[in-house]
Each structure stands twice: as C-alpha cells, then as structure tokens.
Length: 76
Image (tube, rainbow, N blue to C red; front, side, top):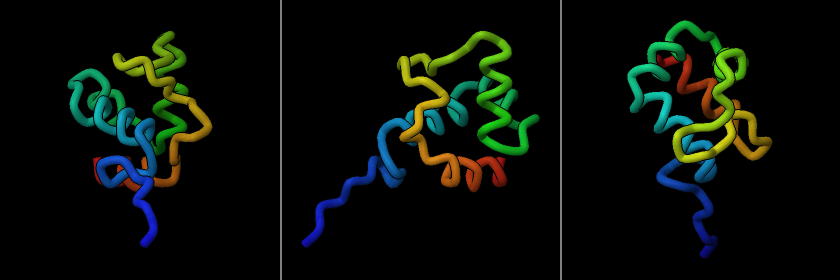
C-alpha cells in the first residue's frame, strides 16, 4: 500500500495553502479573477509587494504545483 503524500486533495501543503488564501480572502479572490493564470497572479502580488500568504507561504515557491493551480484559475 502506498502512502498518500497529498494535502487535503492538493499536491502539497504549499499548493493547498495558496489556493485556500486565493479563494478564501476577498482581496486575493478579486485580484485572481483578473488573472488568466497563477503566474499572472504571482506577478500581480509581487507588483503590490505581497510576497507571501498571511500564513507566510511564498507565492513563488518551486514546490507549488502551478499546473494544478492553473486548472483552478480556469474555474474562478
């Protein structure tokens, strides 16, 4: 039996955390709705000098599954 290494159905904690903040915070959600991709959202956040979630997870960590988040962005 293989061990499940996902976090709440997401690739990892970091991917789940940024998605949670984007969809659970009015300001982040409003900003995300103007973006076509997660990378565009990250660029927007960095332009506003917001580099981390309120839980101190950096938006641009390499371990964040951008493909998974881009799928979620398509549904916003």
